Length: 437
Image 1 (cartoon, one colour):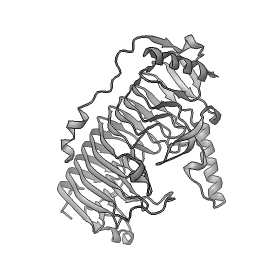
Image 2: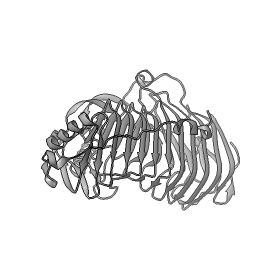
Image 3: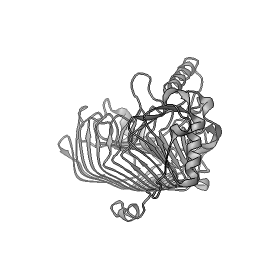
């Protein structure tokens, strides 16, 4: 399927929850919005009651401290302007159970706001979900520095931190209008879920001072039919990360991640506007269009693992404006946390990727990189109608991946491997028209 034909699937579903008319104010259940009182039981009581009546749980003025909350079937949650649901800083307030984490099932804390095995749920409003992540980040960085000082191994799994929102095995979920901030770990993790609408969210985490470690904005993990529109992102990790398993079990226990649309969004600081991997086996039908990238951020990142056969196909980026960003297109092996045995032994593949109508100004890198992926197949890659200027002085010259290490600077738009099928159409790099590989 060609990327430009993707409209048929993303216009075919509607996930709005209708008919929820009764309002249940959490204060009527004993919640106190002073930012100090732990309100977990009171808020959960309101949620449980809403499930019996398909009602709306209302969070009004105040700061409501709480531990993990669990949404219920057919309900809605409205967090109004001036209201904040604030996550507890104590790990004990987040039950530890079997859950999905970095491409596998393991024992890990649940999220602050959880939806499991649900359909027809709406979470919306002009208020804030705040993960209160500072003590978790501080603990993480202190432990990491101690590990470095002692030359010890260290990974994300060593410091347990709750996600801000976690949805597992859900259908027809609608998230709109809220600010998600200061998550201790990933902000919004979707797993084995389908027909998800995410609209007009602001997702932010600090990348200066005590940085928000592993603060991915949205992780789409073995899901289908997900639309993300009119959102604003600024995090200290990937903005939209497309996942779906790793290692030899990746194709046996996971569904493909497919039919994803990201449109009319604004991206500030981050490690990648769209990142494919590293825990991703099969990804297809991804459309990213009419977006603005204003901060130090790369447009496309592909992380390929040596322990997993990965295929990313039918991917379209179009109508993107970038100012002062990083790489336009970054493909390279992911060597961190390679703790699985080798996978199927097949060469991974990036197929039918179209990047077109891009205006990238004052970028922080020379352009496009595909480095150290000699076993990777690049098929049907097209770069069309791109204007790119770089602060580091890209010359527009093409260089091979095995020549990259010989360069004092990285002068070209593309460092590529031998297994490449790449076409340039009206691509200008610092005024130099590009030829085909």
